[in-house]
Image (cartoon, rainbow, N blue to C red; front, side):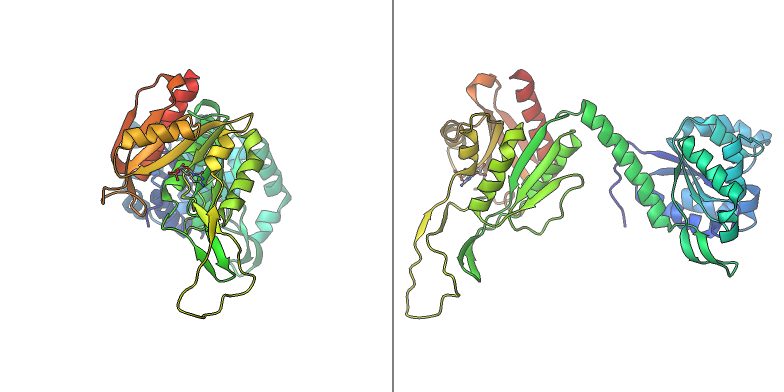
Length: 416
Ligand code: C5P
């Protein structure tokens, strides 16, 4: 399974493996780290080599394993200082009692402890040891020192140990350690986006998916919207440093990382949620395929089959984006239009009629893009006061289109 790495560029991890039976789990850990797209170089202590061979890690990481501090040949390749500088993160797993003691007390008598001292990279330590050794006052004292020094600990788990004891000290699962490291990088990137991203500090509200207009307790009127475009935009806005709230109709998509989701069914509920959020909102993006009409009187009980015809009378739903655009303190308003002909003319008319700042229009007569597709193509128009030319977004993955839309919004905001 190839997980999507959160890193914009390949992140480099020096994995220190120290002595203990849990060293075998580090082989799996290398795989999990590589699944996230990390570049991994392994450093082994002498103790670790009694449990697992450097060759195993060489095969898994794809690089020679580093074992010696005072080895002229090794130092002529990637020496300890170079490794220390190369690392974006130093991960010690399993971290033995001895390696923890060395790091906590500034010893530098082997390769790993020397790299620890020589590196500016953040350090993660996943201890593994006998439960009695874990509980020892000196171990706990050393761990406290490491935490005070800014080292992150992936706590060991409780359970049966290889030595037969039962208690705390079992190495955390490789999946958990790899996820902790990945989350750490993701958070670091997030912190940067929040400061410097295109939508840094902006509150963005996005409507997405279809609405469901109830006929009776078991039936409804809806449409084929999948919500893919809105969800992709939510993801792109979050990546650009915004605080994102997604008001979504019923869709089968996972909520993007970091995005707050409000689940609604009807257009009326979507409007209410939007109105509640409008005050603190800087950018409102309406991607939802809102049902234009709802049933005038929703039946309290299931409508029974009777007669050859059934008439259900419909009344107009509120236009959510137009309603929000009329608010006194209105956010930057982005709407969408799906047209089959005279795209520019209709899109510009809609931009004016709904008092939008920007409209993204797709040509739904094209069979290769649209609703359920993973791709889209659009033309973006801005309200006159922005003095921005129309922007054509050629056919691309919805994810890429979403990023270009974020860029368009940021350009308009910068000029307003
Ligand atoms: O009028 P039309 O449905 O073509 O407008 C599309 C745009 O208006 C989209 O941005 C859609 O999310 C929004 N809209 C809305 N509330 C409605 C109908 C459309 O917010 N009731």
